[in-house]
Length: 302
Image 1: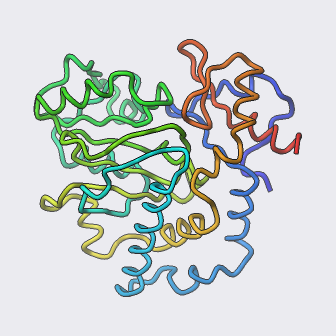
Image 2: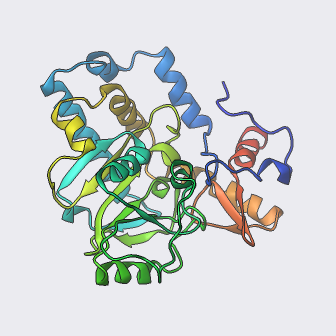
């Protein structure tokens, strides 16, 4: 069973792929095996939690997911992420897209920098991108970390943090790529940062079919769309249970620890510059998605 087709040859045309301004996520043999197990094996916790609305069962499941996913992120040997404890509210979300959607619903205007995740442009085709210098006071800014265009921190990240602090700009960080990245050292507990979100999609192979993640906020300020779903017990149980199954069966940093050598070989062979994201490399200002050729090497050279 192959979820994504394996290329027929080891050629550069298989890696020049773009998807919503980002790269195709990496599904490898282990992730495909886990997906196959969900269909064919009796996974114990799926049986008694699927579609249940019992508050005690759901609460236990949700609490475990929050704990285990946070523990995975903080246990990483490839990244050093701190500041989680400053964010008292932790909420389950249907991937970072729900994080964006909630911000757009709850705010009259959102600021986005040039070369951000293309989802923002798809929602608002006439979106006016901001520069660091032109950021408007008091208007929330959403930024990805790693930055989706560079595959690593935005080159002006320190300046962005200080400008946001000085101009009272609430900063919200999309860290969807963190579980598929390495060498990210970041403290989320900067006073300009109001919330951040991390999903399992890129690092655990759940993209597109089991969107699940967490949002951290410093404190609850009234109701928003995410809080309302939580308060009325409308969080879908199945994606949380599946997320837990993957956390139980994949180590933190799975993709980098498994495919580091393949990533390096592709970059060397095709003259690409490695980024911090396992599935992306660069050459000049062009981004290349490495997932197809990583899969080729895994299936043809092991």
